[in-house]
Amino acid sequence: MNPEAAHVLVVGASHAGVQLAVALREQGHHGPVTLVGAEDHRPYQRPPLSKDWLLGKAEKDSVLLRSDAFWAERDIRVLPGERVVEVDRSTEPAVARTDRGTEIAHDRLVLATGARARALPVPGGDLEGVLLLRDADDALELRERLPDLRRAVVVGGGFIGLEVAAALRAVGAEVVVLESADRLLARACGPETAQELLDRHRADGIDVRLGARVTALTGERRVTGVRLGDDHLEADLVVVGVGVVPATELAESLGLVCDDGVRVDERALASDGLTLAVGDVANQPHPAPGAAAGSRVRLESVSNTLDQAAVAAATLLGRELAYPGVPWFWSTQGAHRLQIAGVSHADDERVVRRDPARGGLTTLYYRDGRLVAADTVDAPAEFVTVKKALAQGATIPRERAADVTAPLRTLVEQPVGA
Image (cartoon, rainbow, N blue to C red; front, side):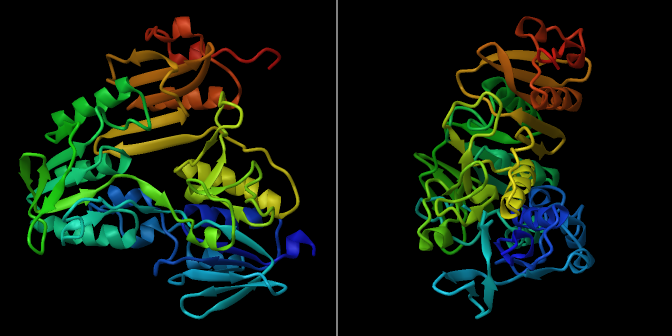
């Protein structure tokens, strides 16, 4: 079959699935495309759920990824509120079945099933008032509780935990953040960046406690507190943000190799050489500059969905496309904006730049003498400079990087022959 005419079924209608469908049309695919989402909502953006949408600054229509007219114009069939539970490949073409009994014959299958929020495995974790925040329904439930909220405990000092904590503080609640590690954002950024955000959140009136291990949530039917060993905190609400688990159940039923997600190659192909996986569910060869040979990663970011979807669309069309960008991430935490370009390692050398005039902080990471990543807090121009430099294969000399009197963009050195 002409790959441009194949019926492509995309399971999962969040950023990755939506972008894959869009990329197919942009790259010339003219066959049927069906996008199936388990949530009973039109495809929407997730990042605002913990920020503007939670605070009522953005309504549902404003966070939709695409309008109904967009899908109609591109002849993309969208099925919300249906979960694909089985794929039968004994027929030609294969047939997927949903929990509502819909059958979808298709030629190619893309898994964009994402990840689900990890529950807190302690006694009381199922009490009323213990909330996770991963999808629109979670955010709706949390938003409905804000008017009466007085005291909240957020378990987890990662992106979601800190974003939610800042939002809850903005509505006047007393907020405690409990992080089991010895610093915030231990998996995402370096100690200098973590300390900067710790200081800022504490200055905003958020009680952040490090090395805090929750042993139980207390209450009869509804949560009333959090136990930390011999200590006990009262709480009207507990929000759990302790990471996610990739949704690999459908992939496993198809016999695909899964290891912290669906293992895919640089073309987004799974182990059967036919199925593709993109987004949060995909465990892919590490695309970051300077990544060790053979290293793999799951990248939970909107930027990765855009880049990987472009690669996957090319694969479906019988072409090859190298991962087109540099992984980058962002997190808006109240008035503070964290932006990360590239992926750093704990043993990378670090150079810290602090802008005394604007208050921004930039940490540059070096591996074997070359720039590989940067964290920035309220320093958007420096983030853009590093992101662009990494994409061009350029660097910033480590011995000059700490000189804040020189704009970072003036220190960039292009690769030889550029």
